[in-house]
Figure (tube, rainbow, N blue to C red):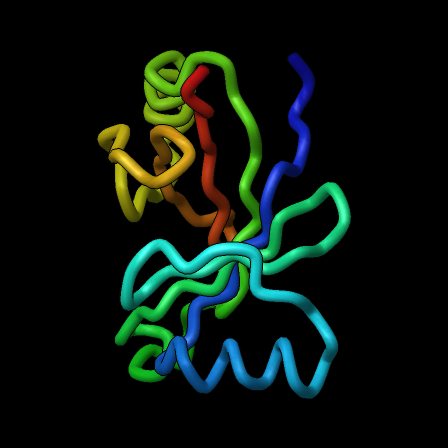
Length: 119
């Protein structure tokens, strides 16, 4: 499977304020809130996810936006990326609402994630 963007995540310091901005100012619709720190918005076929994260406001070098790439085998991707000496943020497949994910940075500090969806 070729790399395919499957989600865009935006890390924010305050989820409620972000939901208000993206719905009332930009016109997105709230699709689902997964708890106090995670929500998805309607954005055609490409989900837009808002995630409250303290480091979004504390680390000026961190990207506030992350591209999520879909994979069929997240464990294979971890091995491949480790062989390439990629700088991981989360290098063990971790549970998330749609399945499992890992997180890493490109050479410029931008955040990317691989997601493996559950059936």
